[in-house]
Amino acid sequence: MNQEKINFQQSRDFGETFNVSVKFLRQNFKLFFQCVLFIAGPFVLISAIAGAFYQSHAISIFSLTRLGAGAFQNILQQFGWAYLLFILATMLASLALMTTVYSFMIIYRDKGPDGFTVNDVQRVVISNIGNVLAVFFTFTLLILLILVVMVGLIIGIGSAIPVLGILLAFFLVIGMLIVFPPIMWQLSATYLVKMTEQKGVFESFGRTRQVMRDNFWWTWVIIVCSLMAVGLAGIIFTLPQAGYQMVLMFTHLKDGSGETPVAFLIVATICTFCSTLLYSTISVIMGFHYFSLAEKKDGTGLMERINEIGHTPSNNDELHY
Image 1 (cartoon, rainbow, N blue to C red):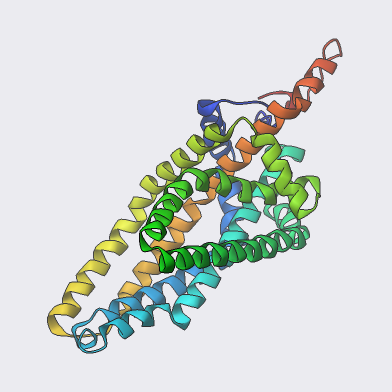
Image 2: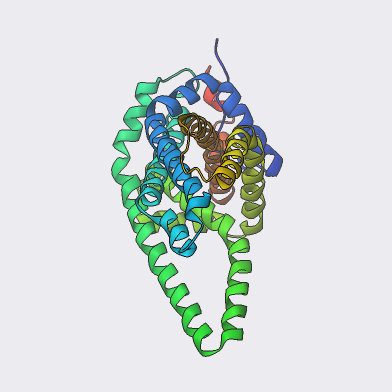
């Protein structure tokens, strides 16, 4: 059965961006989640297992036997090797998931629906490992440097003038609420630009800034709404885990037991695995938002359609939305 190909090079408003993302997922549901499951799935599973063991460790810290003397030191134990392993596994899973989604969108744009397989997507993922790692390590170093400078600035000002330090921290939090969603999109879209246009890391980031110019608040609304929608949908998977975790914490506080049953590890792993896979839909929305802004900025798709006026139409489904 032939399906019409979704045109990526089209400027879309708020509702159209969400509609085309849903249409894209519905049209390619089986193959899309096969790719996510078989390519990114192993990394997500490792992250979910690491998260389950970390949560088990954190629950045991709040047991009655550990809340006596040295409670503060016990709480700090949450940030040990289990936490570090969980963070590293989560970052690796996020990279694998995002790369898989963007690779799927790239090959779909070239071949259309039903024109490729999981192995084709895997080859695109493998060919872009270098691009993804280059962006990741560059951004990681820059973010760490910025955080060190900001924390040092707050501590320095707070030590000299405590009130000013508190005000600075407050306005910093407000500023992050405003700036973080568009920055989050820019960081994610940089990977897509790097994979599709083969630019340098900073050049790719500059490209996202270029297309987002005059569309800052538009991007803010789309990303915030996407996070809220996926977060609400993810409650289906997080509620069983959260409920089980609360029961264990109250049980430990009552009987002083610090042991976590294997059943909790299984439930936490399954719930985290499913909720993480669900977040792959955000990358789809981010991808379509980039292509929409790029088309609005460049008008490449519009010029192609204008040039095709007067030509004999072919049976190519790429011209259809």
